Image 1 (cartoon, rainbow, N blue to C red):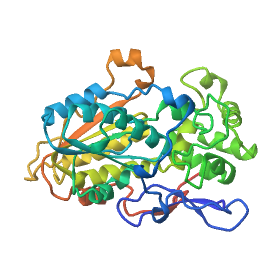
Image 2 (cartoon, rainbow, N blue to C red; image 1 turned 90 degrees about the vertical axis):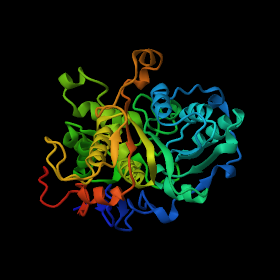
Image 3 (tube, rainbow, N blue to C red; image 1 turned 45 degrees about the vertical axis):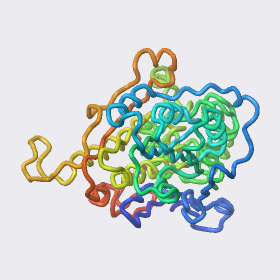
Image 4 (tube, rainbow, N blue to C red; image 1 turned 180 degrees about the horizontal axis):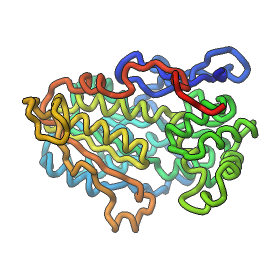
Length: 403
């Protein structure tokens, strides 16, 4: 039996495959909670409506965007400095990449999106101080909705799309956000504070099987069932340190002594689930196959194996295109290539100098592809994607789980 906050996956179109929390009853645990993802009620805030600059520590916060040099090198090989173009930054953050790109390409205009209102406030101020605001259109929304903002400013397609999937350090270090397992705070983990469901709601309402499935699927957590079982046993769990202790007691001592922090994978899995991260990533990449102009470039920066695996698989499908030949032989079916790798298939990593200056860039992985021709590839790929066509509950039918 599922909890009142049942976890479901409804695929009404090829693009929708990530599970959402649904309110299936009006019981006390479900009251007031609704779908994490609800396009009808999603906030779409133009940056011009944000009228307050953040105060306090963020005024002098130093943001270090990751792999800016590599990003600029890719663009400089593709576009001349005086090219007119449209640049979509789906994860604008504090505008670190945007500053560098707009400064080097004087005729690019930016469509920037972010879910975090504070980030948008800082980005707006930063770009204004550099006299770049006249070429920027910023919106509060998830990055898989960038296509409607292109239309809003009178553009059909983009020349360059950037998705940097990392977190700003200030988000991790802010104890009010509840992202970090190293700081004691309320469990939250919402990138957009307008979301109705937080990490606290997830850990205190889902069943053992549901939690176990989340930890295994989104965190590759080896001890997913034991952790989930102990979370349910020790409810209510209200703070990051309370969850930390439960995880610590669930993992054998020998395993805790090696590798990274024992809570890392669990926190990652819950955060991904709360923010529907894989769904947004899938949708955004798929749309880019259609909304990039020919010769346009898509760059994605990933920071953990789960999201990188999704990006790699989708890029591989784009490169293969409509070719039906086995991957071990050259194409003999006559299919025309629609995308090509900009950097090698395995992507690239930060250089030693950047790792020394910014240790947090260690897990970054850059992948990039360019578009050769327009041929409606997104719909074709969506039909091949393994998540297409399913409609399953939290625990898919015929899945064997421990009781």
